[in-house]
Amino acid sequence: MTVAETMRDRLATLHPESVEILDDSGAHVGHAGAMDGGGHYQLIIVSIAFSKQPLQARHRMIYAALGALMQKEIHALAIKAYAPDEI
Image 1 (cartoon, rainbow, N blue to C red):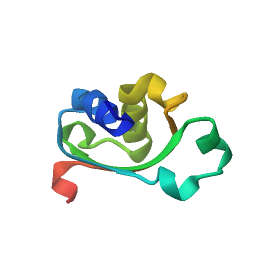
Image 2 (cartoon, one colour):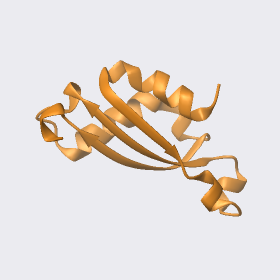
Image 3 (cartoon, rainbow, N blue to C red):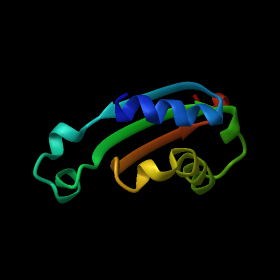
Image 4 (cartoon, helix red, strand yellow):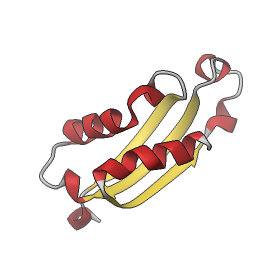
């Protein structure tokens, strides 16, 4: 299973309407985090769980769902998190 697939599985706990994960790791070859095995990803996620939640709370929810992936497999994560009524 790829890191992106694992991310998608873990994010399922947020009951997303949509999840888009882009792997930008290839653009960061030679970067310190990439050399340690961590990838660079962009995440666009839409979930009712984000309704009436501030940006920091949304990010905390995502980090909690991803758990230990944030320690090694994911070096950098750009997040765009929306409630369904925001798109």
